[in-house]
Length: 243
Image (cartoon, rainbow, N blue to C red; front, side, top):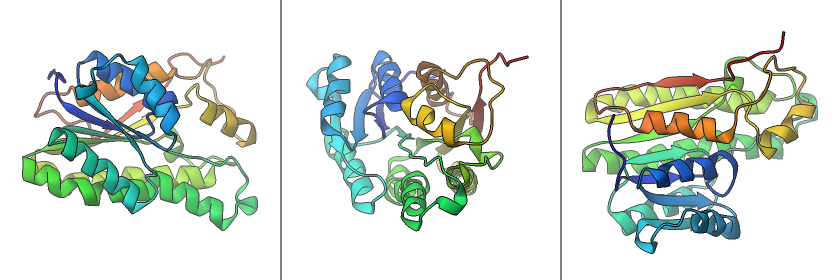
């Protein structure tokens, strides 16, 4: 598997949860990190916990649901390091609510953050990856994309769209040494999922949820694939289920 030492890795939603765990495993690989999120203080706390030298990381406070936010992230990465090797689209939101009670504003928030951010990433980053001769984008999706979950209708739809968009665009750029991968975890032990679960009308058969570190390790596996290897869609779920 390839080394990530000195590779430039961008992580959105890096201020907590899965994103912070991804930052930790990438720091352990001696990658150069671009940590992105909406909360400046939380981002700085995560960066400080990694004990990286100032020249090996940069934080970017940005909202990925806006084109200007994604443009700032990509521009900062290239201004700081001159390239991007791995871009992890991890930022996401969900609203646990029956569809009939979901407002248009809530719908737009979920779609813009989970799906349109990926569109913005592709538009901003792909031309640069083509110019530099390759790179990788890893989109963190969800097992909720496989089947609509009552109480998570808009979230499920946004992640299903991410999967299909990623597959289509990946086919367009694969011969340019650009990999687009999707990682779809089952329920993860985060505040985000805990807040959704009570309002979703589907009981999980899992004996426990995935830990954020387990998801981060899966991202690391995708990022370290050999140059010719491409896992386009990977699912990760707990091993044990309730009997």
